Length: 150
Length: 150
DNA sequence: CAGGATCCAGTAGGATACTG
DNA sequence: CAGTATCCTACTGGATCCTG
Image 1 (cartoon, protein in one colour):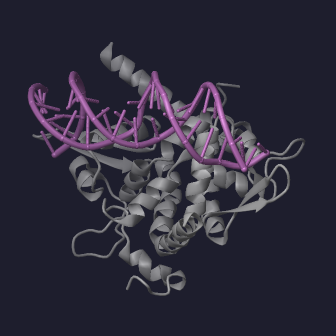
Image 2 (tube, protein in one colour):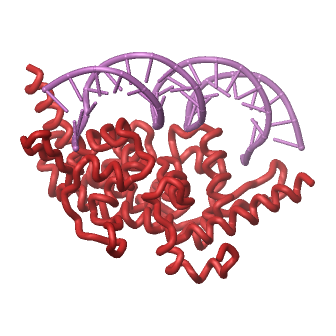
Image 3 (spheres, each protein chain N blue to C red):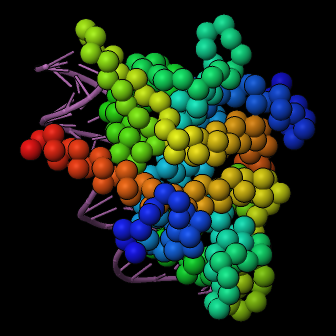
């Protein structure tokens, strides 16, 4: 059962893996993709992200390391590398090296990555779209805390 | 512009917040919800999660602290408390105290939480559903690494 | 039962310097 | 340009003990 035809049996696999269980492999996968940098990298490679002098959403396209680094402000080179390596290992992004001088490296989503990208963009959009609402709730919560203490 | 009618203007707010920017508040919100425990808590409160002697998906319903703790195996009491407090502060879950002895505390999703729950369940389901595929990719990647080194 | 408070180890992750 | 390697700190998060 470990060496079954994996790709087509996902509907079945869904019944076998359970992320609620600490020992289930899917728990680790969930941890890996539940990462702010993963969300932002996938959103970037998925075509979300303003390009100079243009509206917010572009087309999905291969992106270079430095390009990603610039778009995702605040990410360290270490974390970006680490994130991209992990995603490549899991088959979510592909890495292409073109032997120019200096070398050109591009990243893009795989089919598997594309199947996840929509979800991740949804998360990012949700955060951006409900920010005001969340801020309002926080104010209320903090005020209640303040009142309770005196 | 800070005190506008927040709830209905989300479509507008979406144009104002950008999680790609390190200084944008939505970046912090994205970090907060990009958390394995958040994903699992929302999945649990959203009705995903096997109940004894039953199929995998139940109905959304209020859940007690100990119940969540048992369902989400491996979570420490500290992290569960911390996660629930943060979600409560952000208006994603609500906390209800019933003054029995000992006290009964239940958690459930708010409307805001319900709007996020679908996305989070999607992430969890993706992880469970694509586990095999990811494992296959990892094997290939690791093998290639091994070959490259010798 | 549902946490709050403490203590402490592990590691995530930033800064810096160097390489093909 | 696109990383790798190293060092080091800060925070995450688990374990434990205690309370209303």
